[in-house]
Image (cartoon, rainbow, N blue to C red):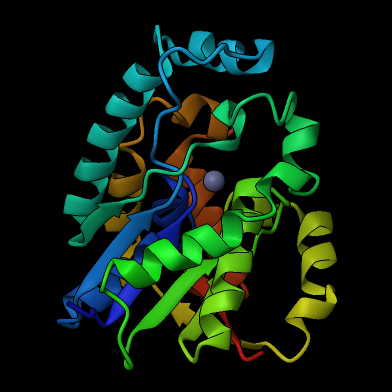
Length: 255
Ligand SMILES: [Zn+2]
């Protein structure tokens, strides 16, 4: 059944991190919100892992990708419950574990390899097939600030949805968007020319957002190596708000 708002998370934590405040605000206003985690799948158990993929498992303290994904699904359900949103998972496999396509963080932050060229179309088709997109549905997904290939694939899928008449807006991928150089670089790209910004005050929902992000315990040390998460999230939100209040910013995309 079509929903009012569909939020696209390439990975489990992206929506809570980037726009958890907006999700909580919409839910409080009585809107129905579904968060779709796109790369929630596990590769075939027999697949050999690259050294880079194996390093992730060590870092996360798990024995297999399936175990990692199971743990992250539990974190995700807890976060979505706090935000008041429903969760829908798609079975695409995270770039780190997608065969041997990406071997380092640098490669994951460049562009989709040719073998992934069909991915945006597959993601758009899976979203349409889910039945949750109707005429009034707003789809909110990543601008791919930081250039993670999985975020780029979801952004490309958003373009395909927009071409079919779906209303689409982009969120600023946090924590990537806190990097001013990456931010400026992405916002200057031709595919965002003509996008209209909308800044939304989320101070009343900051505490909810922080609690939701706090559910992703396996990721917090990697995501916030220097500053405690609540402080980092508050400081960044205050910066987006221009120094007064706490905000999240979205870009309405009209291609
Ligand atoms: Zn991500």
